[in-house]
Length: 324
Ligand code: UFG
Image (cartoon, rainbow, N blue to C red; front, side, top):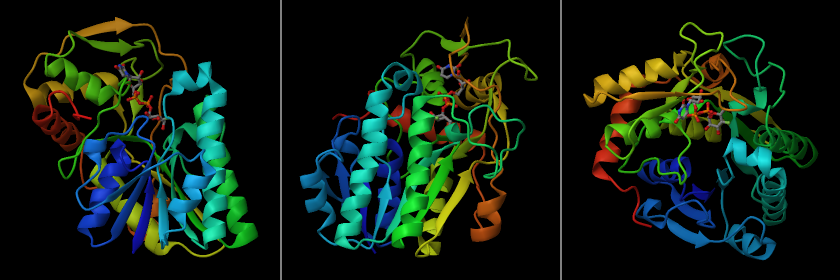
């Protein structure tokens, strides 16, 4: 297939691009390099520098002729979205609307979208099925849910074939590509930065949650398993239908359990500094991924130890992250 990958210079987009290339697809990456890295663009992919908010360059890029789009480009920092919601609605919602318009005009009728567990907000119970109420706790989650709804409506009205994949906590590395957000807010890379000697102690946000050890529980999924789900979802798309799938492992780990696993994997002591709760964190987010398992046969194969181990290997090979 000829694939257009928005956000393909970012963590998840670059690795999904590399997986696509390895499977024999042709890949063009559309990225404004605002947060992505040129060095993360896999060999063999074409890079088109452009912004979803620039309708002209987007139309030109989409018009080159594609069978499908994998749409990763988005702003993702929850507290920033609280402080500057307009940026999130503009980039994530208006940007996607521009993309959907350009796809309709160019006759590209298949799309897989990076949605998020953040659409569920604070769930009533875990594991969370796709049918759980959607009550995002942040403008970031609202912007992703707005796109899920936009895609459902576009499928119904114009025969688009789309899937929204609601990621839980993604980690790990693959094909020599890894996680390098600036600033980094995610737990695993922050813990490993301490192991690498780049920070003195792990900041632990909140120890008084109603969870077994008082720290937040999350569901970690390896980037290789996550990437595989995109291609299963892509193959199964049908005109006029919007598929929605959670992507997680179904197992929850507390922040302290993640730190303990990282101690084992790295052999480093990893001192911890307790901090107050981080605003907007839900105590417990664990996926039910039963829907994608039943419909498409998806099963995650890597556990938390493998996720942390692969992230650690990548960090040791790239002590300063990407060069550009
Ligand atoms: N945490 C720390 N110290 C850190 C970083 C994180 O204690 O240095 C804690 C957080 O407070 C939270 C847990 O570790 O309790 C996980 O935090 P992450 O930032 O790694 O992940 P989140 O669950 O907050 O967020 C992820 C994605 C978001 C997405 C959300 C729900 O990064 O984009 O899952 O899908 F919205």
